[in-house]
Length: 388
Image (cartoon, rainbow, N blue to C red; front, side, top):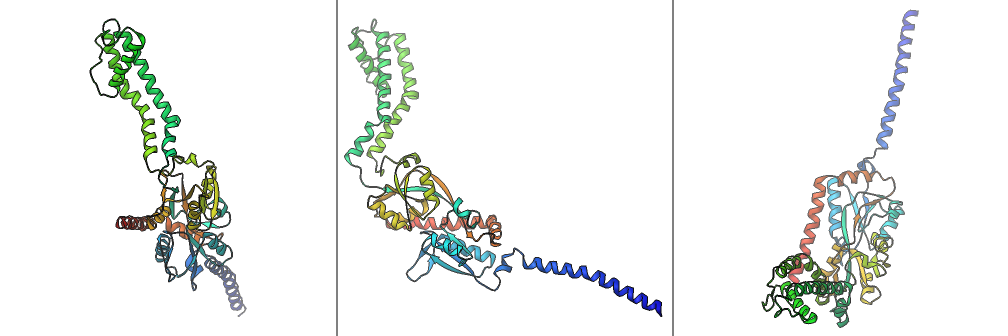
C-alpha cells in the first residue's frame, strides 16, 4: 500500500513539473498576440482617423463637403486592399493635419505631404506614394520693347556674331591672298578692296546663296573655298545657335528671359505653399528668397501683386490651376528643378507603417496608383481641349 501511494505521489509531482512550462509558453504566445504588429489587431473595433490635406488635384472639396482628387482615390485604394474601416477628415492645410497627427487626433495623414528631414524627425513616413517634378509659375505678359531688344545685347548673341565675322575676315584674307595675282579682276590687288571681295565670296558661300559673281580660279583658292564650305557646316553652324536662341527669346512669349534654368532662381523672389515644405527647401537651395503661404491662392496673389517673381510648386498642381483658370496671365517655366516625394505620415513607431510600406511595394498597387494619376491627367487634357 505504501508502494502504491509512493507511485501515485511521483506521478502527480512529475505532471505538475511539466505543466508549468506549458502554461508559461501559452502565456508567452498570448503576450505575442497582444503585441502583434498586425494592423487588423490594432484597429479592430474602431475606425481609423485619416486626415487628408493638400491642394487640387490631390484634394478637391465641393460646397457640400464631398472630397475627390488623386490623394482621395489613392487612400480609397489602400483602404479597400487592407479592408480598413476609416473616417476621412479634411484639413485645409498640411500643417493643420500634421498638428492633429502630433496631438493624437489622427491615426495617419496623407495628401500633399512632402517627406522632409524635419518632418521625418517627428513622424513615421511610408515610402513615396507619388513623386512630383517641381517647377515655377510665372507671368506670361507680352514682352516689352526693352525685353525684346535686351537679348541682342547679351553675350550669347554678341559672341556668336563676332565669331562669324572673324571667320569671314580670315577666309576673306586667305581668298584674296590666293587669288590676287591670277584673278585680280574679282579680287583686286588693293588690300581693302581685295579682302572686301574675299569676305563677300566667303559670306555667299557660308549662306549657301552662291551668287557666282565672285569665285576662286586657282588651285589654292579653290582649296581654301572647299575647306571653308566644310568648316562652315561644322563650326560656324554652332555659332549660329547663339543667334537662333536669342531670336527665339526675343520674339517668343516666354514670361521672362531671366528664368531659363534652375540657376536663375538665385536672388529671385518666389512663394511656396506650406510651412517647412520641400518646395521651400528646394527654392532656398537655389538661393531664392522664399515667402511661405498657407494656400496656393495666397501664393498666386503675391505673384499677381508683383510681390514675388514666381510660384514654386508641383508641376501637376500648377498645371491643374492653369486648366481651371485658362484666362490667367501665367504659364509654367520650361524647366524642372527638383523631384519631391510625397508619402503617408504616421505617429512614431506606428505598427501601420510597415503594413503600408509592404503594400506600396506591391506591383499591382503601383500600377493602380499610376492608372489613377494618368486618368486624372487625361481628364485635365480633355477639359483643356473642350475649353479651347
